[in-house]
Length: 58
Image (cartoon, rainbow, N blue to C red):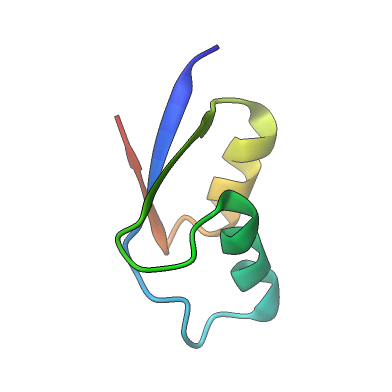
């Protein structure tokens, strides 16, 4: 299956608790961290929830 790389580009400070938990679920704990996940609808849904805090690479 295809892989997708996600980078946290904005701070989680001031974000609602549910968005912080979404970043934790994606494995993003610090700024400019890059994680790789399988490209599936559930991951895309998590990205959509915090689209203003992350950038999709590739």
